[in-house]
Length: 419
Ligand code: NDP
Image 1 (cartoon, rainbow, N blue to C red):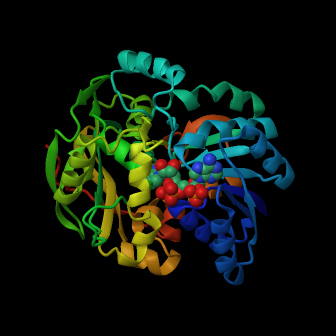
Image 2: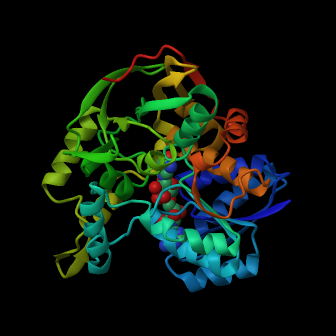
Image 3: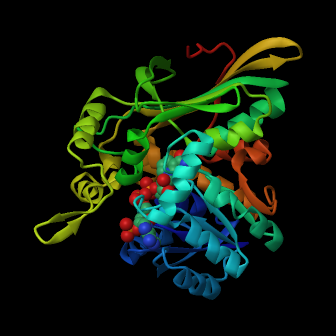
């Protein structure tokens, strides 16, 4: 019997809310609150006849802590699921602390305005000290650790697929499969085709920032940074086939480097087609990925926001997307004195996801883990005051829930390794 407040009503939230409504014995009451209330109302109306979860809706600007506090105090949820954008992580954490409520999200904090001088000063210091230059990192949210511990509240960070499930795979490997893990390669393959020459599968701003940034990986206790898209490999993915993939910086590497003792190397690869890369390079070259406002015919325009308005809404890709995703982790290390390799992954079909929830697999593979993470918190299996990432919790009940609610695991004990 729990009351949950979901903030955001985009592609990922839509899947998470569908899934919560399938587990109405736990998610007895749900409030969907977002910037555009009409989207929340539409989803609530669609789900109401199919579930016994009692759904209400609300309008909120999650950049405004006072609005959040008054919404949380009036609804009194057991948990706030932040499925808006990474820009709102800190304001929502502040509001949860003020109201004494547990918190979770699916992506770590990054600022909307990367030209803000106050943020930039902290960022540049971190780039120098840590050695990677992505705009997002855990330091902002880890700074809340003591506050959440003292308040006896749990904040679960990054509970989508990657970050999220990939860290649960690592925790499972550490608990059951290896005495010591030497290397981890996280492989994120999207074999889906939506038929457009160029579109992003989730929020274009967040997505394009991520892939146009320098890549980096963790090796022998430090970050190694490389120019964007400069390390390319080909891999033959189960049920998808051969794809080109590129090394990217990714947020879970940062926490895994701390939580997997003795790990020598952690890398993250994502597949991209040539058309996507050609478009991205061109947009970057002409300045369309910039977050700095420009003056145009008397108006201030942020190029990447204008681009977002031109591109297809990720939510509209669902009915057009065919093919599968395959996301997982390849480990090397030792068990009982023997060298060992192990690959755990999930394969997810875009069209099946769309039939079930009206969203394609990229939203589905994020929304289902968000619901399963909420389930772990609400049923007391993952409660641990403080600010934590997924690999800090017992992976077993979480992976069982993923198997049950739509993202079953597959494995190989003889995987082809990435050189
Ligand atoms: P969308 O852009 O589809 O949805 C974002 C939602 O947040 C929209 O409903 C939007 O409202 C709402 N929102 C934005 N700003 C505010 C605000 N200030 N106040 C209230 N609501 C607001 O994004 P996605 O669903 O694709 O992504 C959701 C999250 O999931 C992101 O943080 C993304 O980074 C993360 N993600 C994580 C992955 C993982 O594997 N861990 C993979 C993919 C995504 P409006 O409708 O008005 O625009």
